[in-house]
Image (tube, rainbow, N blue to C red; front, side):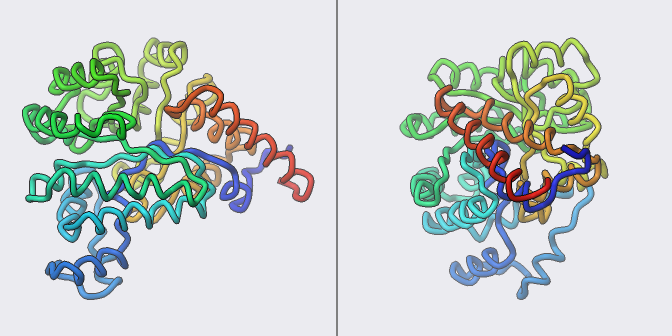
Length: 345
């Protein structure tokens, strides 16, 4: 195959899994205005263009300052259902076959929305995703800039629903909020049988120490972002040996640090680490998963083989049975074989 990066068409129709997607980050301007009107919420914007202009940020902190206030339009179970359903419809267009998606209950319970309202809306959408040919599950995330006590309270609220939750994660502002702050609640989560992952955001203070805590103390099964791991070859060898995947988001990286971290992603890929590409908060970064893959390929001249491996990695580190993983890998191989028959990639 030629070394030129593959076409947008090839990437869009390539079967893939999305493992790093915040449902709250899929709030498109059109839906935000619709929900604001439905729920009589004054948001200070009247047009799609005004909402789009408000989605401006150049760091993680400035992003979060826009991100959380926007959630005020989410009030009812139907609102949460509609938010997740709109994402899933877009995921189908991207040929996502498996979606393990984050949600942040504390962002809603802290403003008076009941946990069950949030959960039931999201969960119904994941169940309906089968109509779209997508297998979807929820990952509950704790907000690391809230207290450990709040995380434990949220965990207790989630226990009645544990058979409907794929795993537990950790996100939001990492500054002065290391993984160790939440070791007690993650210990309980593992005891209850939850799978666990944690955000280790790019170029944060104490990034390597936070990665160490996540890997060796919390013993996560995946790292979200995590590309600073290249600074420690021993950690890289550890994740490779233990099949711990990284869920990277190149386009959102470029918004918060002006760097996709493409070199690091490629380095990890070439070393055999199960690194993946995902869209993070696509409504805010104007990039869904195929767009992220294409942007990475275009900016770093990825080969078709590298894009295929990224897609295979996404299924290989998904929280699904081995037989199901193999079925998806075969689906990729069949797609590539068929595409080669009718196109020059």
